[in-house]
Image: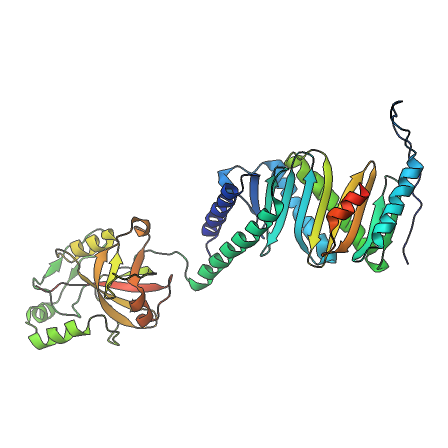
Length: 297
Length: 131
């Protein structure tokens, strides 16, 4: 898992522990690689750094008592409580009146839980963060033709200009039978084993699952910017549907809306309803390839 | 077989007239008596009593003496370093807890005491008894 995410999560955890237990004056986590994470954005004092690092040598020598689990230093002006959590050490400076048993319970529950969740996320997301758009491949229609076929496409941003063959343009202009369209609409949201989607602008996005009573299973959510880019690229008013292809080869077509929750905007996510995720056997954090469907008019 | 070294007498630096005179020899002997009594408790494995030039060690498993001595010295050093960094003032006690055992370390005068015990032993009562 990305170390930065780990650090942020642990910092927040320390800050929350300090909020709950105001007797903690300073709180740090000594990670297994020697990094010191401080709560509350406080700077790590060099003397603290040296002292905390001396723990590592103590931990090495503590094998004779089965490894270092806890260390409590009681001074006449305060205390330091150090606890081992999943190979890391939480270091907390406390006032004399701090309730140690409460703190033990708190750190013994909160930190291992957070680490477990982080590790869980880390193992689920085999591919961490690269969210660069995949290069857009030349446009050749593989699905129903758009109502306004284009002979040429202008380059937009990084998009390469593509010129279609006259024969292909002719294909595009050919009207599609109504029966075929009907069959298509019935197929929506069904997992289909059709040919891989290769010809439309596409993007790899991270799956985020969401659910609820009012959630339509056939509607996914995408960033406004992505939809805007696609619609300008394809010269259409808006993108109403997308094709989703998993890395196991499963594909489905869903309606698409802009991400409603600001928290998830601009993160390269595709929010897919849980039911659809189950159908596609998708887990949160997996990557999928998403392509716009050219709207029919 | 426990190894016992004779702890030398230490003179007090200064004694005021109004305070009762402290006999250092008696103090050390008392400390040894207290530690021996503590060692007889169930779950207590042994102790190390160190002064500047001597030490008394009484550990049930003699093969562990060096490991325990190194560990208690390292724990004291680390605790002093942490105490300085976090401004804890004078050290009262240190408890090192491992997966199998725990150690109570404290300083009385120039004597450094480490008591080794099983995890279920109440180290607070031992601390009270020593101090």
